Length: 99
Image (cartoon, rainbow, N blue to C red; front, side, top):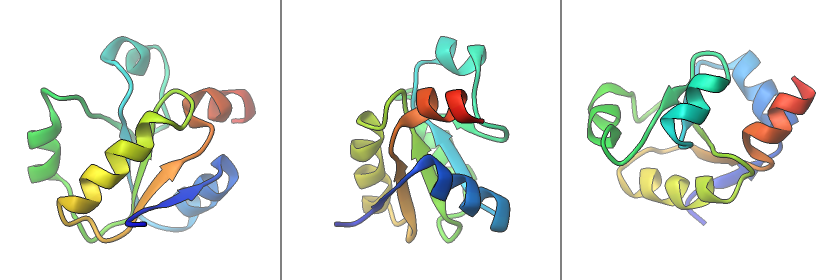
């Protein structure tokens, strides 16, 4: 597998200990209603700007609603050269309930 899945607790530990990029692949309205601090909303229309603006050598954590769509996105970003890619299991919904 070209990316790793991690729990929300593992994601929180990684966010707290390293400089990471957070990609939120939910729709813009959901992103505006709530997101993880410093996350970037990535959609089909903004993905090219995201690719050109982010450091492919930094860890990239991708999340969606429940941790399903982020897996496909993680595969995509790995194929674009991101070396350390994670899909957050449980997604924003689980994160929101705990944090």
